Amino acid sequence: MNLKKAILPGTFDPITNGHINLINRAIKIFDYILILVANNFKKKQLFNLKERVLHVKKATQHLSNVQVISISTLTMNFAKKKKFNVIIRGLRNIFDFEYELKMLKINKYLYPEIESIFMISDDCWSHVSSSMIKEIIHYGGNVDLLLPKYIVQEIKTRIQQ
Image 1: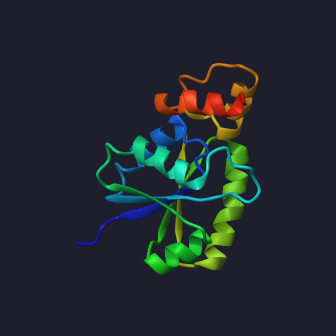
Image 2: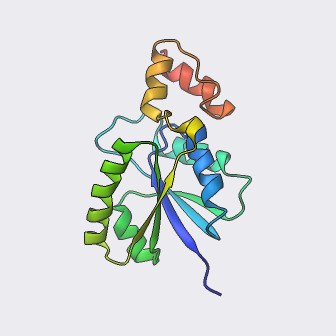
């Protein structure tokens, strides 16, 4: 039997309800999804890698066919080594599309066998980004409906220190 499997990479700093919505929708298409939590050298992460992996694991614990790990290599090197040929990417808007189109071309250069699957965010999550959430919290705004409950107080404490 040939499983339909895919990787879903991201920094997830923090994981949002938009991310969780995407994962829940993607698992209806794939038999197995491996979520790759990584650092982004262009951004200063609020949570360390271990914390982010734990947050994503908690958010996906209800899904038996989802696994969460951290990586510290190029996603395409990992995909090639582990024989994954599908990558899932979420698109919220046209700016995400432009960025992801560039990534698709680079990913194909690095690993020609990879196929990118783009999933459009549900309307209620299309405005949500981790950086926007951090900014809202910094200025005292309410993010209770944008994040899993177990992260809300933790992130507020961190940002407001």
